[in-house]
Image 1 (cartoon, rainbow, N blue to C red):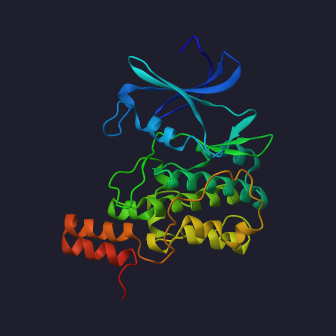
Image 2: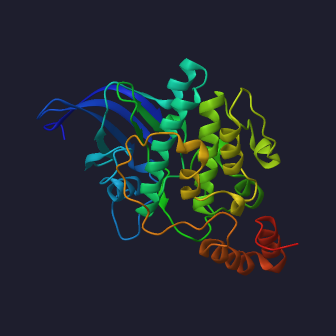
Image 3: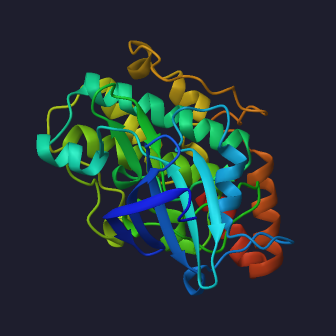
Length: 309
């Protein structure tokens, strides 16, 4: 590894590892080098000897410019090192928002569109990111192009319920706090709603899990009615009332925006329209009936809007 790359200053440190600025020696290309201690790796894909993060990055690494590209990786005795592209000049979206207090809707629209493109590509490749937030979005300051980064919490996208959450609690959907399970696609839409609110208002919509469960949403700044509608739709309390990704793409608030960085293919299978019972919802309901008993299953179906009355 030292013959091909040179590590430099520490860029950031998180729960899954430390990221350093680096250079590829062959051509002096800037790279980011993430070192993850073997003992910190909690998820390994079945039948492989590589961490989930590497496996997920390999699944999404072609066909989308809005996702950070994995260039190389190395297995060391006590850790793994991931070598990724490092756009220059760049800044994470969290710092970008903080320095401006909030983002004008036109700027937020262009960034949000590119994040949607990245998420659509992930889902088309069977990957659920699970930690969509400004800190995990890198913005090229020269071109305004974005990169979705940090797949340390990612996993395979399925249509069945998840009973473990990995990510940032203030971006978790309410069904996780109420029932301790969730469906991948509606949970992703919730986190996108939190992201959009944070961009246009400069603060998080909810301060704690109790706020998330209550669902009381107010806007701290003047925001257009169309933008408010999209945010409220994404932050619906009931998962099956949230829009699909394609519904979000087709929302009037996004229709006035150009399509920067839209280099990703459409999803392999279209997502169900909002309000319709998807295969995932049905499978989730069956799972709950089996695992939690009749009463628990009935509450799940009633709460998620799958039963009338």
